[in-house]
Image (cartoon, rainbow, N blue to C red):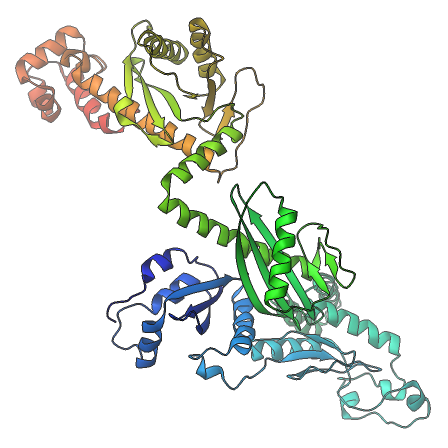
Length: 606
């Protein structure tokens, strides 16, 4: 589709694989298109694919895009509803197919005696209850069908007042004869009984269908027990419909007529505030604002400033403001709500999702341009998470490696400013330990490492990580104490299975959030130490005498190893030799052992 003045590839990296609404802006910062998507990134990227079948109108639209913004929501239905309300609000130039301004249908529970339930596109504030809107007309009709099959409700528009019924003004109709209505017009059904059904229907339409489903299941089982299989089948069909039905959407509730929703996410130097404007149950405006902190302002102070700015900018007259915590703003005309449950809490959660995503996007963008900022933030976070009193600019991690107690090697990797410093990696050939003794190996390696740093007057690390549990940590601490430096640095052990962090003297481990950046850096250090240790260990095995290598084969001693080497000249040729060729030097049992050993070599533990 040609070249773009706008770097869409960078923009796509910031867009998540989540449902939501996207907005395209032109060079004059005018909103030119609004669209919805089940997967925002996939949908937006489709506009920029080189496809000859793309319409000329789409090509013109894409050529004018200079910025892309988006709002994430919980579900595809939410995206649909939000798209509708935003298009009505902004009327973007390229949304021509939606200029008919069609409205979505609602289900109404009429404010009257023996309320009728039907659907409508027109909301009249007469005290009736409106549920929806429903972006899928078929979904709405399915719900109404379930209600009408499950409950006997009137469909006539008669004025069923107590006085009219008592006066005998009405007669039952065909619907009563068919069993679709219980005849309230002739007082065959009381208003209390009818209202109980209406209450259950409201629960269904509000998504609170657990009780209704439980009752249906009981009735279904009862019908089956009484051998009334036709009734059981009808109830089972209703039960399945209700099980699979969801009538609620996070962004819609007709009872929420005019509210402002605010949430905040802050970090050391910046804060971000998201604003949602909700009218008649739908979001008509959404924006996130970035605030640069001048001093150490609290979130409450920043949120108060942002609320004033947004309400002034959009001339909002809402009497209710939904916020994540109590704030002190003196205005007798405004009610501040901190919801804990229900529809308002869902709206607040949606706002918080958006502000957190915006914050991550802005921080990533800023840190990409200023790597030192990310570095400082990571180190500060590590210092807090690991209860240190200094920034861990210099971190070292130890890992032991051996094979069946032989060729023991202890590796050390070094990170400086949260990045590998490979020129400082070292490994130690263990000298004082006989046989497989992981604790003693760790003790020797730690002692030799820091004895040398002290002798050469090199700076010590701020953080030392030991790959292992309490035993390896105790061994490392023993060496640090011998050198008298145990209080000059922080030393922790990381257990492999559950990513537990152990501190000297602490009985219980520290658990970090699995998604925390601190844990990811520690895991990276541990994995790098393991990789480097394996490499060093294999080099040591390769550099060891070939005879010693062959002595690992069961049944092959020093003499037999030397004979094999003298005959075949190298371990490689021994590895490739056939059984008959090997029997030229050793007996059948030894020859079989050699072949078996080299076959399993690739799977030997490191």
